Amino acid sequence: MVTYIDAADAPMKNTGQIRLYTPDDFAGMKKASQITAGCLDELADFVKPGVTTQAIDDFVFNYGEERGVYAATLNYRGYTKSCCTSINHVVCHGIPNEKPLREGDIVNIDVTYIVDGWHGDSSRMYPVGAINRKAERLLEVTYDSLMLGIEAAKPGNTTGDIGAAIQTLVESNRFSVVRDFCGHGVGKLFHDTPNILHYGHPGEGIELKPGMIFTIEPMVNTGRPNVKVLSDGWTAVTRDRSLSAQYEHSIGITDDGCEIFTLSPGGIHKPGL
Ligand code: MF3
Ligand code: CO
Ligand code: CO
Image (cartoon, rainbow, N blue to C red; front, side, top):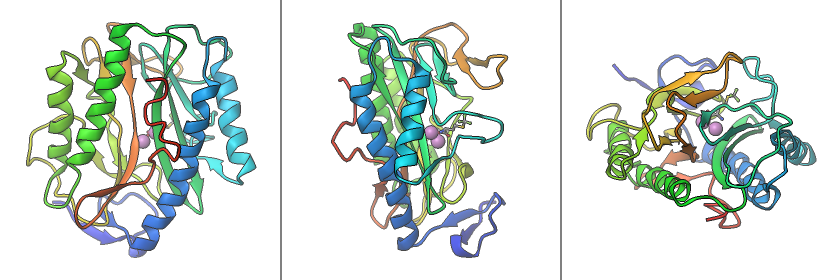
């Protein structure tokens, strides 16, 4: 049984009840999310062959520092970086390091800043120089699947409608949806209820209500959906080493649809495409 609770009355821990947020809360999420989106915009010109993912992490750290905000991943459950950088067959949670990016790579950069307690969580794919046609098609399909999922995010629909919209587009393009990671409630907590699956059937799951805030962040593989986590405890890769892509937005359900908090202020929704 799903229950809903006024966000202001809810305890800080994840109790399984779904919080419903006020217009003021939406404004807080928007402010945090726009700082995240501004950083993702600026990274478009920064990502090129020869740049290390550690340099990207430093960029994200400094961007926050200059604005007096903190990256949520830093010291989160033992994670020690300001963002995740997931290259090629890395599905998510890639850890920035000193290895330079190479022409033809595709890299997801996932950033979350905490602003006045609110978490703005978003990620985009960045082509490194020229990429091949299959990689380009993967990025387009993954982005389109996120936006179709967002179109399904409205009152009266369910979480299953979101997943079904994403899965249908992905599989009609002969790609696959990763099952082992999902979107999540977000707000004053980084990861809260509900889970937002990126696959499923229309009408299944939880009914969407105005005031809900969560992420949608489909991970799409060119090969099989199966993933494994490397011995560093974080890096998730495709088992068949096929290419993987992800885009993520933080959104809030409104009376007639949803507000995308993390929309690119500069219109750089799909960097490099
Ligand atoms: N930003 C990721 C998400 O979209 C979570 C990263 S947690 C980390 O939910 F610890 F791996 F950074
Ligand atoms: Co997220
Ligand atoms: Co994220």
